[in-house]
Amino acid sequence: MNNYILECDQLSKTYRDAAAKIDVLKKIHLQIKPSELIAIVGSSGSGKSTLLHLLGGLDKPTYGTVKIAGKNLADLTENQKCHLRNTHLGFVYQFHHLLPEFTALENVCMPLLIRNTVPNIAKDKSEHLLELVGLKERLQHKIGELSGGERQRVAIARALVADPLCVLADEPTGNLDPKNAEKVLELFFDLQSRFQTSVIIVTHDHAIAKRTQRTFALEHGELVVV
Ligand SMILES: Nc1ncnc2c1ncn2[C@@H]1O[C@H](COP(=O)(O)OP(=O)(O)OP(=O)(O)O)[C@@H](O)[C@H]1O
Ligand SMILES: [Mg+2]
Image (spheres, protein in one colour):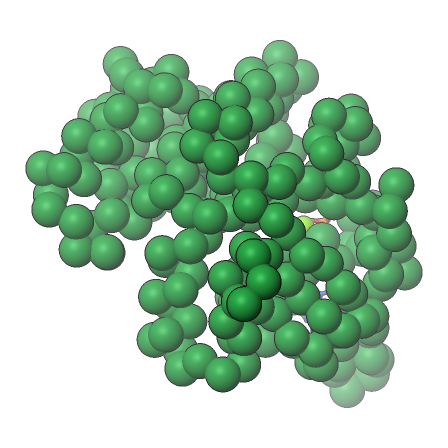
């Protein structure tokens, strides 16, 4: 086995309906090493979210392979895929996807409870992560009682709480004003270097992309080095 955390080869996705066929991704090849931070830029509709969903095993490719920690997703059952995702990946979605009826603490605990972590340990670890993202005073707030920037920080804490090998972040600063975007981003870089997690950040923002180790652009379904 090689030591790539995440890799894809010939990865292709075509959407079809009665009227049209859209080749969103065309034979994408990408390999992510441990603790590597990369950015993927591209205009709206270029396929960035589609690529992240495929890399995270949340959707199936039309053609090509995705491997997480050396395991080809096509060889796994849904349950095995879920398990692999849960143990190796963290997600920060474009629209955070936190559970609104639950508190910040409960949301961050969730990935650990799914992994059958003892509740007290899950709580301690989640509190620690929320403290690191500056939300020590907001543990018991429901998601609806938090600001946009605070929600995004909860989402980052949730993505990191189960010690993933790689975090897939889709526009993590997309809905924030410049000041909060900068704060969330600093946090991301800090946590990434602290935990040695690989991170793929999808963004419109070329300023973010300048600060990562490698940057790619999605153009006409192809990934090009920037
Ligand atoms: N389920 C679907 N069925 C059909 N077409 C889809 C589907 N999902 C996405 N698309 C199309 O595929 C293209 C890529 O979508 P995607 O969401 O990956 O773009 P994106 O780069 O993330 O855009 P944004 O920056 O606006 O989030 C778009 O043209 C979109 O309309
Ligand atoms: Mg998107």
